[in-house]
Figure 1 (cartoon, helix red, strand yellow):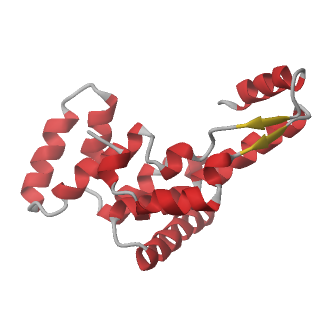
Figure 2: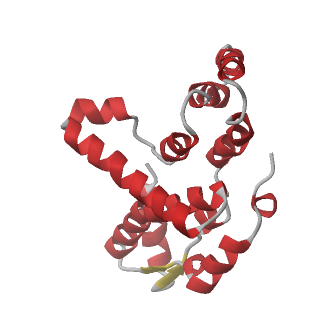
Length: 180
């Protein structure tokens, strides 16, 4: 949905410059998206007995608030599935309508492999989530930015993704990146 805006801004900038510095990657390495709060809220609930999870889901589901409904739906999932589902933007049911089931399974299994790789490299769930985001969502937005800036004949650079910044950001505790 942001492709047209990125292209238009890039075309405008091209009148003045040939290289743009962008903020792409900052939200992914510093946990800047509001959707990252869902796993943060649900992580402590994972230790609750099933009956309490179901009661929490029911209470949250009564709200008309979109975020509470997302929380309600996620309370019944395993925490790994919460992390995987949280980083998806297209619902599985829509993918099933448009594509073969095997592609859906491949997408999910790829995300599970990436999550397992994250678990072998990092100890905290938030590091697992951000690693998954770097390997999935960030790739797509970088491709979008590259296509739109190149179409406008300007080069987009991503200073937040310098390896030293990414490595440093991965060492920061979650409370310095995100608050409830």
